[in-house]
Length: 343
Figure 1: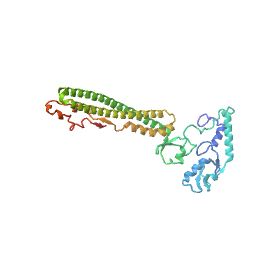
Figure 2 (figure 1 turned 120 degrees about the vertical axis):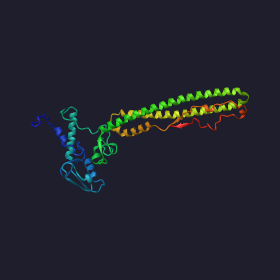
Figure 3 (figure 1 turned 45 degrees about the vertical axis):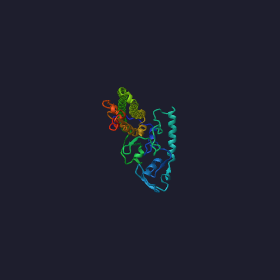
Figure 4 (figure 1 turned 90 degrees about the horizontal axis):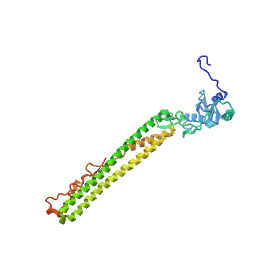
């Protein structure tokens, strides 16, 4: 027990003490071979030493200097850079012996209280610039996941960073809101499609009504109007078909928009079910932008008010007996009535 603090102090095993002595002061992990020894007698992974050297020598001049991260001793390098430093074969041999001992302990041949070797080869994504480093932070400035080495020595050293967990929760919440916007947009599209379907029915009903009215009018004047009757019926049918065809085309465009929106919604839902924060964040920003863009929807067409009306095709038979040969619907003034407009 510690007399000053009153806390129980557990004895440190020999393996734990050895592991601490074999840890690199830069990556804080066990030395990765080859291990180099500095003139001040401190050791570094050659990869970590090279990262430290390149951070001080971005233009790769011949030679150069860097300071030991343990004692701040200024290390002078020749034209070979860190590859000119002497390897510490003793430390490398100790590391091999340590790993062999750990393998025996994991197989049941040693003290079960000693901790296992730290596993650096996890399934988490690795940094593309530092292959041995896991992606464990998020660069807020560049909006990309990265590793600690990139923040300390790499391209993100002057950027603002944040823990993965905080950004993961924030963007997941933002993506959830985008999904809700998609659902709302889909409801609006479905309502418009239902309205256009009802309008198609009204157009057909009104078209049938005008056909009956026209038939009754021409029956009274059958002898003179029979030929004109067929001609005007054809005009009504053509306009009915054009209006219905226009609405059907608009409805197909809304269906395509709805299909694309549902596919993106499914893609977003599958992305949100992924457990890896880094994997999620790599694609989260793009998915958020796509969801917002799709939720806003394109400028699709809608029929203008009165588009379903066919009253402009009605025929008044009063006082027209003398003009039967020239009778028409009078389209010059009403040709554009009830046209299709844009949303």
